[in-house]
Structures are given as structure tokens and as C-alpha cells.
Length: 401
Figure 1 (tube, one colour):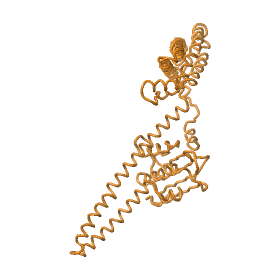
Figure 2 (cartoon, helix red, strand yellow):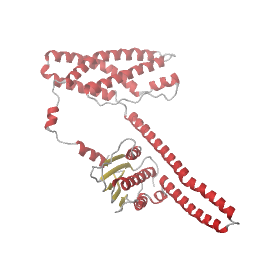
Figure 3 (tube, helix red, strand yellow):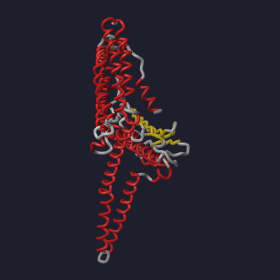
Figure 4 (cartoon, one colour):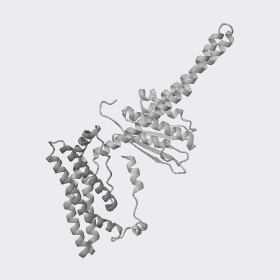
């Protein structure tokens, strides 16, 4: 990410201090012995994995033309996957690796046949089988070399173990890491869940607003008109008053429906884009000093989904500023940068805004992340508050507006 990545780097980068020097671990500390243990265990773990892989996979391949061959091959790959999980766990606990756990294997179809097909097509399972074979060879090397170093190589033991551990870590991360495609699928599944939950919440809000607002008002209006109709001949003056009152109710109901439609997707956003839509939001925001809006997109428009996220994000942030921060003014800036839609919302009110689970800002952050965007809040206690949002310009291929 562009602006947001720079913001994160600025906060993460700092010069080492004396305290860091004091906390630096000793060459012969606990980490060294974890690395020694890992190097010595490579041989027995590698031997066990190699035996399982060779016996089950070669037997399964040899019997592939029979009924039991493919299930046996799938079982061998599942066992290799287990050894892969053991390798990742050892790398994290003993070598300081940050390798992630992959998603569980999910068969596309139920039943034994579905599980067998999923296992045979599991790239991580085959890579785990290769890891079992490589680990046996590497385990022989690390076991012998570590024993020699423990006996006669104490002056160089820490550095040698660092090198051995680096190779072991590389093997795990190269062969046992979840594939980039698998990680992307998991992210998209999480994002899809967020979008579905957000859509369900929006539908419940619309239903509640219709039920408690416009629907209740229209029901009362129908009753008032019915009474006015009954009194039309016997008490025209009273009926006229009731019709006048009903006329006022109609105006209120129409205004509520307009507000509800604007909350779903404002017509001005569809017809005229972000500049006009955000200017309309700014004009309605109750801040004493007003809201400055500057949109510079070069006459182009992003995807409608991105426009909607940007619009509702700015709307919610300005509403929060008016209700909770005590701000007098706010500023909204929107621009395009390197194929991304960037926007910032700044107010001069009290700070202390935080993204916490279940909060309004968390919902905005999830909505941005659902399209591969980012959401960063800078809000010191004394203010001001600055929210930076980065969104993709396009969310899918195809013709653009």
C-alpha cells in the first residue's frame, strides 16, 4: 500500500537503543540449545517421515489400478501432510520461523471418493512428501555435524548452528508454507463473510427503518383518511382538517423514504459521482465551521462498488465527527494515486478514536479490507483525528465508466 505503508514504516523504524543491546540474547543462550535440539531431531523425524512416505506412497502407486490403491495413496499424502504440520510447528517453536498453518483440506464432494480426490490434488500434500524425503538426507547431515560440533567445535558452535537453522528454516518455508493462491483464497473467504454479514446488517436496518418509520406513518395516514372520508358529508370542516393533517403526514413519509433511499445508494452518487455526492453529504453535516471537500479524480470514476464504499465511509466518519468529537470543521480529500483511490477525512475535534472489535470504525475497516483496501486511524487524545483510506480503483475486469 502507498500512503498507509509509509505510515506504518515510519512508526516501526527506530534506531537501536542501549536497552536493546542489553536485551540481546547470549550466543550460548536458550535459543542455541533449541537449534541444537532441532538439528538432532531432524534425523529421527526425517527417518519416520521417509518410511511412511515410501511405504504408503509407493504401495499406493503400485496398486493404483485396484480399488485400494488410490485410497492408500491418499492416506500416504495425508500422513505426509501431518509430518508437514509437525515440521512447521518445530520451525516456529525452535527456529523462530513465522510460517503459517494452511487451511484444512476441504473436499469438494462428500464421502470417501471426495476425500480421496481432494487428497490426490493437494499440492501441499505432495510438497510435504518431498519434504519428508529431503529431511532424511538433511537430518543425517545435521545430526552428524551437530554431534561433532558439540564435542570439538564449541568456539564455532553458535555460528554453525545459525547456518544450519537457516537452511532448516528455508526448507520448511519453501516446501511447507501455504501457497500464495491458498492464502488468497482464505483471505477472499474471510472477506466474503464480512461482506455477507454487512449486507445482512444493512437489510435488517432497512427493514427496521421501514417498519418503524415510513410503514407506521403510512398506516396511520390510511386510518386518518378513512376517518376523514366518513366525516366528509356530516362534518366537512373537521374532514378538511384531517385531510390537511394527512397531507403533512404524506410529506413526512416521503422525506423518510428519500432518506432511506439515500442510505441505500444515493441517486446523486450514481448520476454524478463522488464529488457531487460527498459535497451533498458535507452540506448536510452539522458542523459549525462546515466541511471542506476536495475531489480530484481526473474526470474518471472508479468501480461503483468502490465508489459506494468511499461514499459511506466518508458519511459515517463525518457523522461521528459531528456527534462525538465536538469538532468545528472537517476536511475531506479524495484523489487517485498509482491506480488506487485514496481518501482522507480530518476533523479538529477531540481525539482518542480507536478501531476496536464491534465498533463503528471496525465495520468501516472491514468494508475497506473486503476489496483489498486499508483503513488507518491517527487520533491522539488531544486531537485532531485523521483517517486515511486506500481502496483499489477497480475490483474486477471489464469495461469501466
